[in-house]
Image (cartoon, rainbow, N blue to C red; front, side, top):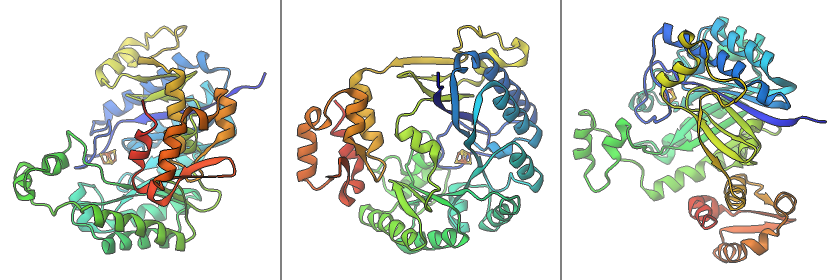
Length: 405
Ligand code: SF4
């Protein structure tokens, strides 16, 4: 019997320090904590491996946080355990997130030896002033050093992460960052807009729109920052992204992701296509057999289950590890997800796939929504596919919300 496909995500919740806009599950930690966490991850893998023995792993993504903050031997231990406990496909895409300031030639060589074949590097902006405002630990010069190290180590499938719509950013300053990144010739560029998340220093500054920027700045640790771009400026920034990256040979295959031909991120595509994935590590989310769940986000609890003192007491037979908040997805949930995740891709969704998976006609179930959104010029259809138009991409959240009951 052939094995089911699985994507693996491994979370490394450590960073040198917290960036001003970041609400990811990550933060600084001492060397002992990092080492103990790497060991706990290995125990977590051991505890769930039986349950996933009939799966073949097609992609692995070591994300964070800043996975490159780990010492080479810690990373090697994690990858060694992964390859022992899971059936990793020989042509698996194995990605690791790295950040400038935490990369050395020795580490890069270790990652290569571990089978990592794709790196995602956080640049965010090519402007040192913007990097400082974001609270990043690196300058553009330090990014370039990292870039040279990873290219020299032979990594030939690399993503550069950028963030647009920064405070004070104009279409021109954003264009400069795009040109600078594209000139380097990475195989993939992710360009997400800044989202001001609650609980971040940026939220204290920008989170309550009814107050003036100056007043909000006073709340934001005494810093005075420029205002966020308005809607028109943001649209200009967004359009510049596609135009500029097009010229360098990057095609947009998802709302915020651009790749040279053949270098689309398989791991993320799997997520948008609702492939099964298992998250390992603190707070990591999973979708397995139409059940969503995630690991505890409480480090003490996680280490209580998998830390050395407890010796990994989780019952291996249960295979649940540190997972909690199980949610069985209904047919409706699954159909909705199929649509709003699938529409993120520029190729959109296939009517035939919908029929094959759900045994129903998408144009019957969502007749009213498809008709209305098509008349509004936000959705289009061709050759059995339904996809966002340029206008639909601009207000994609509205389009998606129309499919959620
Ligand atoms: S490096 Fe990334 S994960 Fe870490 S604090 Fe900054 S934005 Fe968050």
